Amino acid sequence: MGFRIASRIVWFAGVFGLAASVALLAQDSIHRGRKYKAPPPTSHVDITILRRNDSKPIENAAVVFQLEGDKGNMELKTDEDGKTMIDVLPTGSKVLMQVIAKGYQTYGGEYDIDKAQLAIQVKLRRPGEQYSIYENHPQAANADPKAEQDKSGDAQKDSSAKDADKQDGAKDQPSKDQPSDSAKPDSSQPQPR
Image 1: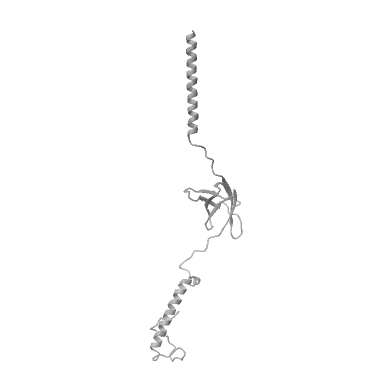
Image 2: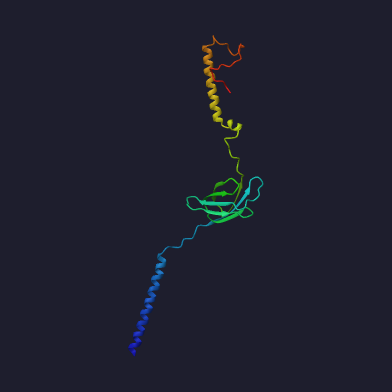
C-alpha cells in the first residue's frame, strides 16, 4: 500500500511538473513574439462641401482621401448638410483630397494634417461651357498674346522688307506721303488684314 501511495504522488508530481513547464514555455513564447506597438495618434477632420455660387450644401458628394506615399484610398459621402468626417488620418501626415459631385467640377487639393482637430470647407463650381470648333470665338483669336507677338513680329518683318524694297525702287514708285493716281493695292505683295 505504501508503494501505491508513493507511486500516485510521483505520478501527480510529474503531471504537475509537466503542466508547469508547458505554462512557462507558453508564457516565454508570448514575450518573444511581436511586441505591441500603439498606433500613431490620429486627427479628427470635418469636411463641408458647398456650392460656390450660393453656399448651399451638396449632398452625396464623394470625398476621397489618399495618404501621401500610400497606395490605397478612403472614400466618404456627404450627408444632406454637405458634411462628412474622418478620424483615422495620422496626425502630422500629408493627405491628398479629391471631391467628386455630379454636376460640379472635380476638386483636388493637398492638406497637412497637423492638428488634432481640423475643419476643411470646399466650394465647388458648376462646369464651364464646352469649347466648340463649330462656333465663332472672336475672343479666342485675341486670347493668345504669344500668337499676337508672332503676328506683330511677322508684320514688322514684312514692313521692314517693304521699306527696303521701296528704298531700292523709290525712283519708280511714289512715296506714301505723295498722293498716288491709283487707289488699287499692289497684288504682288500680301495685304494686311
